[in-house]
Amino acid sequence: MHKGTARAYTNIALIKYWGKKDDALILPMNNSLSLTLDAFFTDTTVTFDEQYTKDVFYLDTVLQDEKATAKVSRFLDLVREKMDRPLFATVESINHVPTAAGLASSASGLAALALACNEALRLNLSKTEVSRLARRGSGSACRSIFGGFVEWEQGTDDLSSFARPIEADRFEDELAMVFILLNDKQKDVSSRDGMKRTVDTSAFYPAWVNTAGEDLTLIKQAIAEKSFTKLGEVTEANALKMHATTLAATPPFTYWSPESLRAMEVVKSLRKDGLECYFTMDAGPNVKVLCKKQDRQQIIARLTQEFSAEQIICALTGPDAHSIETEVTL
Ligand code: ADP
Ligand code: DP6
Ligand code: CO
Image (cartoon, rainbow, N blue to C red; front, side, top):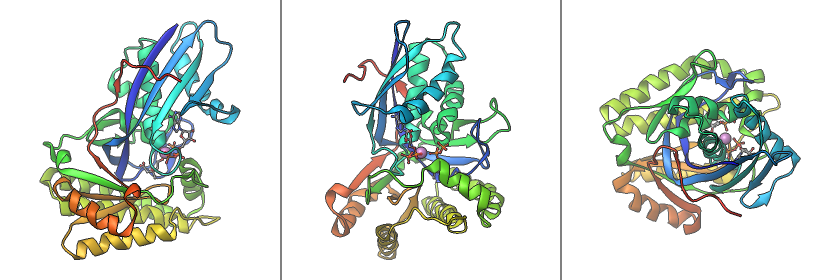
């Protein structure tokens, strides 16, 4: 029996990954840059055993159906390529994050699974290698191997596409991200399908690809200068640009709900009142608010005038993914 357990935190991109140049290897069209967060994470235990006759997947203690298990099996197949004698596995995972709601469960989920496999099989992969492996499960997962600011270098092939931490002289410790949970139900269009449809059909997609590099340069300047204003402005503009591409897809779609728009307006009005903060959104209706850590209580107080206290969750910068002793038990 080969058993390993790992914890990985979610990350939210400030410069988004939106579109693949290689669907099979999960190579992205542009570099992305994220902040790893402490409030949402996944714990995963994987057990490989000679006795097992198939892969089994429990998520949040619930035995998963064939389709969900097949996705995990496809990832385990990549790990089995590294084994002399391939074995089936049982995966037990707890998401301390809503699943498939645009809150980056695939990032923490696949990062935790990749690291748990490394632990279970004593593969002794470097963090870069675990990042590459996690990328094959879900692109954004390669960034969750590291804490703080993280850049995913798009690369040109399997070997050269991985994430690495960005040295920021602890600027990341001055930040917070406040989540406004508007809907934690599973979304209609997964990130994978949404970005594929956009790449294949959106007339706005070339503009996204052509300007992603400039956005990345700007955000790296903001980090180097520790300029919160610049960081926030680029973050917000980049998210809006990503979401604009989906409206020009065929068939068109949007991840925004009326409540998302309301939340974005609230952020703007906070700003007008001198409380500096900026929003970003992913493949789902929930809105995330980037602010200075020192301002978070005031911002939470204002947001709870507009939304219920249960809808507001504050995250600070999270650490690297790591192995843990206590296995996930059912
Ligand atoms: P999200 O916004 O939550 O990242 P995605 O559409 O990108 O949504 O991905 C959701 C998918 O990620 C799930 O349907 C499942 O296949 C996978 N996933 C989420 N959590 C886990 C986990 N803990 N272990 C394995 N796979 C997971
Ligand atoms: C909008 O990593 O979930 O959150 O690689 O197909 O699994 P797959 O997609 P995923 O896409 C994330 C998209 C995003 C932006 C980001 O996290 O960079
Ligand atoms: Co995802």
